[in-house]
Image 1: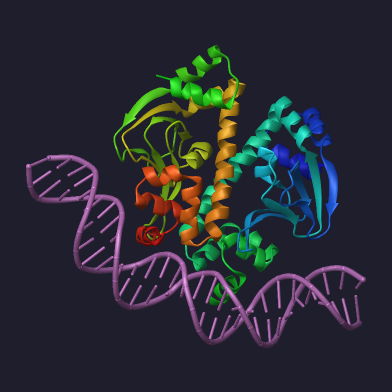
Image 2: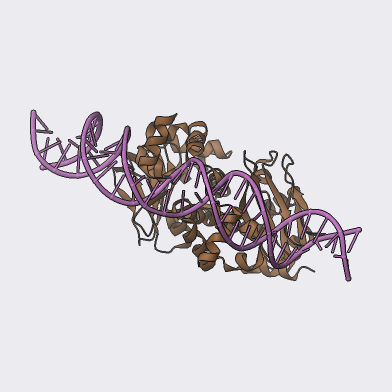
Length: 189
Length: 189
DNA sequence: TTAAACTGTTGTCATAAGACAACTTTTTCC
DNA sequence: GGAAAAAGTTGTCTTATGACAACAGTTTAA
């Protein structure tokens, strides 16, 4: 049940079996269908999700009704509507499953109890946030200056899984372009 | 000497005077001229900086020789070439002073010693990273979809200090546009 | 103080990308 | 399995922005 999550944690920090067991005991399994909304606009996000199987997407809808993807999370990674989760404010993001998924969910109270009592878990969270920040900065550097064709090449090189796994529409919203533009760029390659 | 830094810390967490004194004792004052390079491309960044006075800018140079700003830091905030500092790899970013500045610098070893021994300092760092991540995500949402004029309005609303304090050229590199485009957009308002 | 360097403005022109629409292909789910 | 919905492709047209250049204004530093 918890093998993947245990591996994820062990991959971040050295941790005793006893602690590991305590940590995982707070996670509850959860199956979703496709397009299931785990956090909607206006809700306060109260869970962190580990993905055993499937794929989630965090996105925001702008004034014109277009959506922008914050990030994707595939198997063996964690995600939540972070801003809402951290600040405990109504979310401006939607967190949604792109495929039928198998998740392990932990509630916010349990999450912070673990963070505050188990240093190795705090370290896991800390590493997640550090990585998330580094990744966001990388995306700013890569997507703010580049032309469309170069953004596409960048993702092909650095995050090829996204292209094989995720719909063009969603990828376009991650690259900051329309789907028709992405389609035309793909044809050019 | 350390008043501003102490206030910065106290603003994040409740902390005893004794601890506060221990924390600040690791920070060394440092004055810079304008355009002084605190971390250059290829160097491994080994310091975190608190800004008492002045302004720093973190940026990267892309293939075409254009530069993109990662973020700015003004008075009473902290900054480093985070990616390099965290991963201990040669930096792709430059960290530079935009004005003559008064800084308090802490070396990486001291920094992590504090993080590992003083929970309240760990919390300060943790909050910094959380905020930095949230801010980066916000920028992705705001700048990836928007047209130039809306990006400019966004900064006017959310980070007006940048516009009054920082050169147009640097602001343009923060917004992901050329300086001539920014100048024309300003004229339109 | 003054020359040099840098910054910002404005113009023209070229081009990448958005908007919209029509159409095809694929996927979904009853 | 098949109808309906969604996703993807491709075309035309428009527009925002980049590239480049000339110039003006400002700052810097010797």
